[in-house]
Image (cartoon, rainbow, N blue to C red):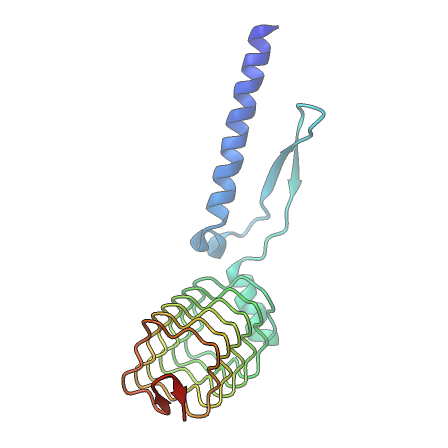
Length: 196
């Protein structure tokens, strides 16, 4: 009996470690981008030692990109590392979306809703973001060089360490935005901590 419970304990520990490793791998952008199968999750009932497998639906980054390009609607979806260079996303709804390290160079985001979106480390160089809503967006370390942010709402946005070199900020609203460490050299319409 003692040997059996020891083996059961070892099996449970091993199963838990496999499960945690699987979850960690699925959390990685590259794993999500290539995943084509529905993952299975092993759960153990608190009142028994029987493991059960359940299918958990998972939208991949590629699925979300396809949906975004077709519908221009992807609220809160995972677009980590997505390649959207030169994409026409004018007036799209990406509120709360995770676009961390996404490639959006030269994309058309004019009038797009990016409120609360995570754009940390995203490439937005030469992107048209005029009139877009970026309120409370995370643009930490984002590349916005030569982007058009004319009339954009950046209230409460995190622009720490962002590259705003030669960016057009004319009539943009930046009240409460965090610009610590941002490169604003040659930014159009930017004077100190205000935009004119």
